[in-house]
Amino acid sequence: MSTQTNFEWVFTMTRQKRKLFITIILIIAGLIGLVIFIFRPNPLHQTTTIEPDGDRIDDLIEQVENMDEEVQTATNDLSQNLKDAVEQTLTIFTRTDYRITALGDSLTQGVGDESNGNGYIGVLERRLSDHDYRVRFDNFGRRGNRTDQLLTRLDEENSIKRSVERADIVLITIGANDIMRIVRENFLDLNEDAFDLERTSYEERLTDIFEKLNEFNPDAEIFLIGFFNPFEGYFNEVAALEDILISWNQTSEAVAESYLNGHYISIRDLFQLEQINLLADDNFHPNATGYSLMGARVLNEIIPTLEQLSMEQEENVEGNNASLE
Image 1 (cartoon, rainbow, N blue to C red):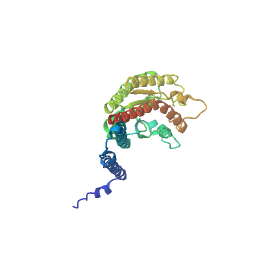
Image 2 (image 1 turned 60 degrees about the vertical axis):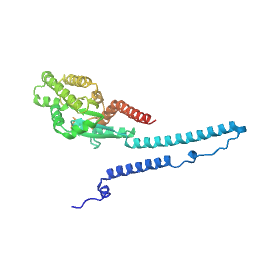
Image 3 (image 1 turned 45 degrees about the horizontal axis):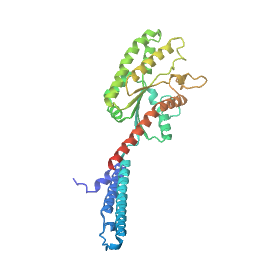
């Protein structure tokens, strides 16, 4: 088997790795050139013979002081050049983007968006890009997921775990299918007791989800998005259905807010607007307009977190620069 030459492996790199390798080489070359510049023979440091004149001793002292000032100025300039070069290097390798992991059901997947705009996640991507935020999204939304199924995925899908471990923000839509299962199983006899009993189990599973996410990454900010009522057109006979959804939303909010890094985002009011069609043809999922409203609400809630992360990054860079002074 033939072996690679010293430089042959460079050409087997991916384009991204090759670009990073070239960047590192250029930086190293620049720093070497800067070191050579610093330690090259400097005319300011050459020995100068000064013939003292007893009658002009004050002028001689002034001349020496001026030379010292020139040398010090040159030294300061070199130090600043070196500092600037290091700062530029740090800037290249400093993480300036953010990671958002989206988990949950069909609302995260974007089902119902007739514009193929990826639902509210697509809205966030576009709006954040407009705000000059560089954000990477990992979307793990899956149509039909309930809380028990999301828990199973957190245990079994390593890709989700890895994404959460690196995430700055985790967004979750979950629970609507838990409610729908009760509706299906009790279609002929819908009553509040069935929903109240299941709500306790839902609370336990949702707590387990938050515990699992914090186990993966205690530093990530977790945003749980609440429910809206898509059932009104079909189940007007259940007068208490709105109250049932309110109680489930309250449970969701209580669980989320019980964690220091937990947040709850209400969207119920958005889908109560009259004379505006916000649902897809299935009368269950949002359409593009509905997702736009939803995305705008979520954006408004997560922007403070992104601004805080940006400030922390700037402080870290300033701290690194201060340590070089």
